[in-house]
Length: 207
Image 1 (cartoon, rainbow, N blue to C red):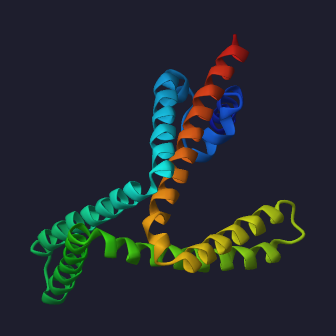
Image 2 (cartoon, rainbow, N blue to C red):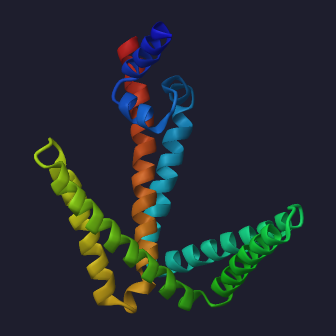
């Protein structure tokens, strides 16, 4: 077993700069090498879509609202269908109620996307506020451990975003979701390109 773990670690080391990222993501470096063109192309596509979302946050916000509404509606229908396969009145009733609530929430988001964006923006602001506070508190618990400052930076950033969204509300509802979606897509696209580029450098080093 020890030899197997050692061999697996060596594969990540041989992957070059992409090794640590691949290890954290649970990806096999060999798979990345074999499909590095697809990784690079997918990363470029996510960068493009993310950039468009940032430059057109209003449209991206509506798209995100429709997407969430669709997910809620589909999940609600699936839960209601699953309820009829269960046994026990209490379980059936609870699952039906959960599915019905999800379906209603999804339909409302699809029919009224602008009020839905307001609601989702409120939820996002609350998550940033709570998450930022917890990360800031956790950072001081980690002090003076090396790297605690980055945790503090992340917490303060989340708190600043929450305050920005709240102060600009309700106008912020028009652009918040689209902007965050764009940033997330760009970060994901950059990580894919980094994996692809790192895999290519690993091939050059091996040669």
